[in-house]
Amino acid sequence: MNNAALTDLIIKMADDELIQGHRNSEWTGLGPVMEEDIAFSSMAQDKIGHAWALYRMLHEELGGRGPATFAFVRPENELKSSHLVEMPNGEYDFSLMRHFLFDLAESVRYESLQDSSYEPFRLLSKKVKGELKYHTLHANAWIMQLSRAGEESYDRMQQALDQTIALAAGIFEPSQLYEEALIEDKVYPGETALYHRWLDRIYPVLVKASLNLPEISAIVPVYGGRHGLHTPHLQSLLREMSEVFNLDTEASW
Amino acid sequence: MMSSKTITIADVYAALERVMDPEIPVLSVVDLGMITGVDLNDSAVHIKMIPTFAACPAVSYIQHNIKTVLEKELGIAVSVEVDKQEHWHSNRMTPAAKEKLKAFGIAPPKVLAGEVSAELMMEVPCPHCGSEQTYLRSPFGSTLCRAIHFCKNCGQVFEQFKPLE
Image (cartoon, rainbow over all chains, first blue to last red):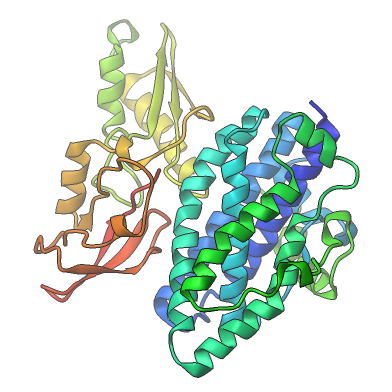
C-alpha cells in the first residue's frame, strides 16, 4: 500500500473534520433556539472526535506526529481542508446548508470506506457512519422545514444553496499525485465517484424541499484547499484554535 | 480484597459491574456493553473496552475508573485498553440495563433490526407515563448519546439514549 497516498487522504479528511468541527462550535451559545445550539455543539464534538481518530491513525499506523501537535502547529499551507469548511458561519441559512452538503458528503465517503482495502479505514468507518446518521437526520429535517416555512425562508435557503454548491463540490478535488494509486489499491473509489454518489444523495432531499439544484455542468468546483491554497478566513481561525494550545504546548489535558 | 489464586473471570465481571458510567450513574460498564474482552493470568488482568461514541469525553475517565476499582476489589495489576476491532452499537446494551435506564428517567434505545431511520426516533415511549404520544424535539441532547423528546400526554420533555448502528 502507498503510504504517501494514504497520508494525503487521511490529512484531507481529518482537516475537514477539524475545521468544520470548529465552525460548528462557534454556534455554541448563539444558536437561534436551544435545541439548535445543542445540536451544533454536539456535532462539533463528534467532528473533532472523528478528526482526532484520523490524526491518531496517522500517528499510530503511518508514523506521523502526535495528534494534538499535528492538529495545532502546522502552518496554514500544510493544512488540506476544503474552502467550504473554512468559510465563516454567516447566517443560519448558510450554516445549515453547509452542514447538509458537508455531512451528506461525509456519509458517502465513510460508507465507501467500509469496503476499503485499508483496515484502519474499515474499522473507523463503521463507527463514524452510525454517528453521522444523526447529523444527516438533523440536516435533512431542517433543509425541508425551512424551505417550506414561507417565501422569505424559501428564498434564503435557495440563496444559501446557490452560494454553497460550488464550494461543496470542491470537497471532491482529486489528488493530482495519488488519486490513481488509491483507486487501484482499492483504498476508496476516488473523488469523482464520490462526487456523483453525493449528487445522487443530496438531490432527493432538495426535491422534497422544492429547492433548485443548479445545472451540474454549470457548477465550477472551488478547488485549492487540498494543496494548501486557502481562503483568508483560515489564518484567523487557526490563530484562534491554537491560542490555548500555544500557551503551553507540553501541557497534558 | 481476594487472594490472586481465587480470582476467576466471573469475579472480574462482578467487579466491573461496580464501575459506573460517569454520565449515567445507574449503569455499569457491563450494563452498557462497553467491555469486549477480559484476559486473566496469575498476576494481572487485561480489560478491553469500547466507548459508546467516538468523541466521548469520558473514555479516559472510565478507563481510569476500571483500573482503580478492579485493583482495589481484586488486588492484582489491571491494564485497560480501547479495543479498535470492535465498535459500540446500542444492541450491546443488556435488557436489564434498559430497565434501569427507564427507571432513571431516560428512554432506552429501541432494538435495532437494521439501520437507524427517522421513523425509529418517533413515538418513543415516555419513560415517565409510558405514552407513545411523543415527538422528537432534537436528535442531540445533553450528552452525545442522548436525544430530546416531548411527551404530549404528560407534557414533559424527556431524554432518550439514542439507538446507534
